[in-house]
Image (cartoon, rainbow over all chains, first blue to last red; front, side):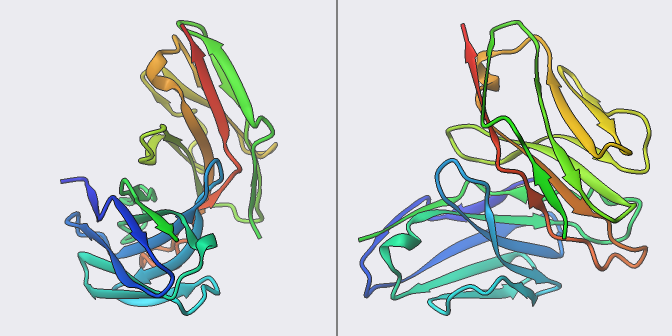
Amino acid sequence: DTEVTQTPKHLVMGMTNKKSLKCEQHMGHRAMYWYKQKAKKPPELMFVYSYEKLSINESVPSRFSPECPNSSLLNLHLHALQPEDSALYLCASSQDRGQFANTGELFFGEGSRLTVL
Amino acid sequence: AQTVTQSQPEMSVQEAETVTLSCTYDTSESDYYLFWYKQPPSRQMILVIRQEAYKQQNATENRFSVNFQKAAKSFSLKISDSQLGDAAMYFCAYRRRGNAGGTSYGKLTFGQGTILTVHP
């Protein structure tokens, strides 16, 4: 299984709603990531979890709240979002164990397309 | 800080022809990975090819090959026998390699991307 699975694929929410994005991987990867991507732009890193602990927060507004319940799951809780938060949200994972056996690559999910009205 | 530059916002190629996408990067590290990722309009980011900096031999994957010039910090992607399915946005990316204990792998730094159009 070399997949990163994201749900939902599409989400429309109002500015007062609370919703969550979910991500799952069963590759035994120890690092998981959330990225935000606008059209025709590269992904922007939001959060990194390493061994289930938050290791990087790229100064993301508190209306985005990540959670890593276990080594296979990653959530992104959304609350009081703004229309400019509309984007494709990508989850990724990487092995990040050892050095020479590690390919270094990130595996990406298909993304969740978020529209904030 | 590491930077990755893709100087070609858009490229086009005829089906069955060859195209080369350019990428340069800047780093003070000596041990790192370089990647080319492809993102079709269906949106999933897929790894095309990977190069480890300590390897002098250029990576190849079927129709895809790279020209890795470490001293010049250049990492171009050549697509041979282009197919309609190669149409996508291509991102060059850099990542510092971690230590033997598996920690301190760097963040993945992307270039701005190149949109490749393939004409039938």
